[in-house]
Image 1 (cartoon, one colour):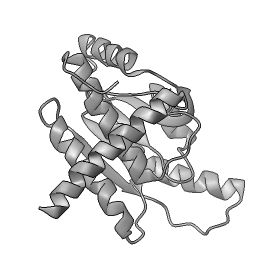
Image 2 (tube, one colour; image 1 turned 90 degrees about the horizontal axis):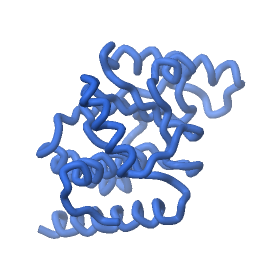
Image 3 (cartoon, one colour; image 1 turned 60 degrees about the horizontal axis):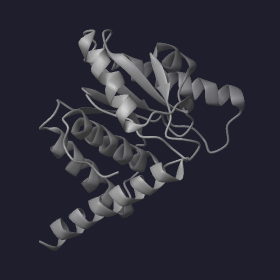
Image 4 (cartoon, rainbow, N blue to C red; image 1 turned 180 degrees about the horizontal axis):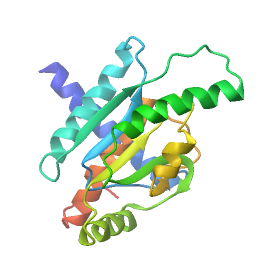
Length: 196
């Protein structure tokens, strides 16, 4: 009972934070019609502080079940020392990129999350996704990179790079924000109320 109450309050708090970020102009909304979310996860031992993020992701994943088939695919980070040369970083990203691309369907329209990508507002992104569906591109993949970012091969495979702004987010928080924005975009598309 207490955990459920805490989870609901956490979801409300995250929604408020996301709204503040959007209003501040530091980032733009994205989202809707997602069949796969490919993301790179660290194999490091989970921290207790991530429990609430996972609860939020689970909650929005459940809500999205009314709108789409959502699949979250995790790919492990490559093990690497703390300090790497530029060449070593590229090698690690290339290995991670191969694992990511192996999970992406040939027919999928791919959005890679990248700091310098295009920023959308929720309404425009909903229109973009709607247009993709009309033209038969309803299989959509969002890719969140690991701590070093995405490889050149992954960025070349992407149909589009999108961004939440110049801010850097922990991986789990980025996933939560993405799933919340996808849920928000579905509500916009269906003409249902959503927080502005």
